[in-house]
Amino acid sequence: MEKQYRNILIIKPSALGDVVHALPVLDALRTAFPEARISWMIREEFAPLLECVRGLDETLLFRRRQMGRWYAPEGWTALRELLVQLRSERYDLILDLQGLLRTALFAWLSGCKNRVGMTTARELAPLFYTQRVRPASDSLHMVDRYRGMLEAIGVTTFQPHGTLEPPASAVQRVGHLLEDAGLEPKRFAALIPGAAHTSKQWPIERFAVVAEGISKHFGLALAAVGTAGEKKIIAALQQNCVAPVADFSGKTTIPQLVALLGQAHLVVSNDTGPGHIAIAQRVPTVLIFGPTNPAWVGPYQQPEAVVAIEPNQRDKAIRSRDPAHRIEHITVQAVMDAVRRQLGRASGDSRQRRRHLC
Image (cartoon, rainbow, N blue to C red; front, side, top):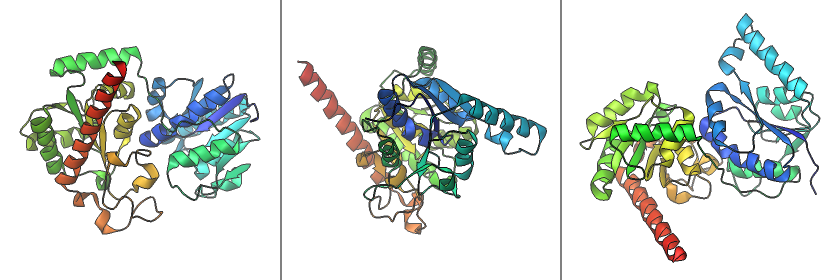
């Protein structure tokens, strides 16, 4: 039987999609330690995602922009406040899922005696762990690495897919947004053409062709999702697409984004956080990958959701240097084939559920 921890901290500040991959850790810890207090350190801008999960007692905000200027009064104050909070909580277990020097240092400075991290963590971070976990030899995926960290502390019950449940206020707000845009729940496809890096952005002209194909062949309305800063990308999508595309850029908070994507019949996305949110909600989703290796951060055990060049023939690097793997080499046909697979699979699942109910 595993040791009974009473006060646990998960450190996973970013990024949005990576936090989604880490959600099963929270579920596993809550199942193993139902009476424990569980906290999560996360970057301020991603913290609203945790409003959509169960089993979390406290959120610690990592104000990266402020703390990055630790030499300025505002940055030093934010850093000091976080360190004081870490020390005062008296954690008896910390899991560093980020694996960087700064997160390992935070774990060490907390005074916690049980600090778990991977042997492969970067920037000398393993020096600050009390328990170092070797990755499994048969998998690169981050979810399996998290599973290994849990097994190292005796937690063996693990479901690899997290759960997101947006608050009622977010669901209500999204209902109004859909109504205003003339969209019906489960009758539209959500398109996510933006990404944090240009190397992850599939050419917008091809996104438009796929959007038209979805509208024409599957009768779905179209909605584009993104941040306020991605409004130009979505405007380009609208200009290149004959079918109308509703623009939701900058109109949703993260909990509202969770609710919106949960109402979609299909999601087509670059490899970016919102796409992984859709996957977590079991929405039929197509994720388009460029240099990033899907074996690390793709939808877990869902190869049918991935479109990438040679997704199963890359080396162990998280990011490929091979020019052949650039996202612009992915064809419209490849994405449309994945759309058909996902929608066909969703229809099959729906028929199977109806037969089961009968």
